[in-house]
Length: 217
Image 1 (tube, rainbow, N blue to C red):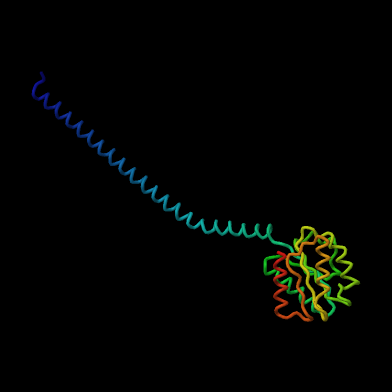
Image 2 (cartoon, one colour; image 1 turned 60 degrees about the vertical axis):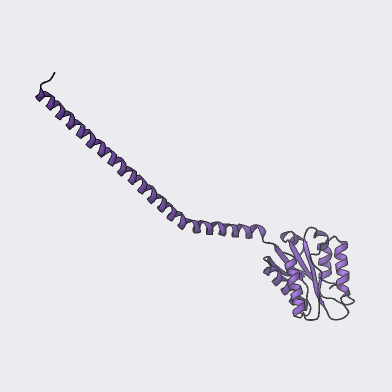
């Protein structure tokens, strides 16, 4: 058995070691607590920063996607419409302009031609084509320029949206009935009923022309 003095020294040493161990343990616990707090802070900060970043990025990304969809949509979906006419007094030309306005308002890319400027080779470049010619002579199409054009193109209009229009100064529109029947016999698909105007087109006739243009889109 150890002397009392020796036992006291050993007890004191044990107590000192125990104290240091507890102190180290407390330090480690505090370090762990501090580390955990730091991790939570960093995590919260990172989350907040990430949320702030994406909140700024999201509208930009959305706008970019919408712009891309708009551009690609316009490129892939925009119809191309041709308006081809012959006019002697300007009345059918005025109708042609209204047809073009209606097609543009419906979202089409529109080009207007006189009958001398258009030919069979141009058909492939358009989804819809409106043809305009006034009544001439004994209720017929203009014979020197427009009728030859119509004869050349009517057999090549399969799969196209087609519209007919024109003005007249006498009779009741028999020339248009004959023209529409000829189109039907040639397997031309009319997108809407033909539009006629007695002399200069009034507001009602212009509105009908605009509707015809929209039907070609």
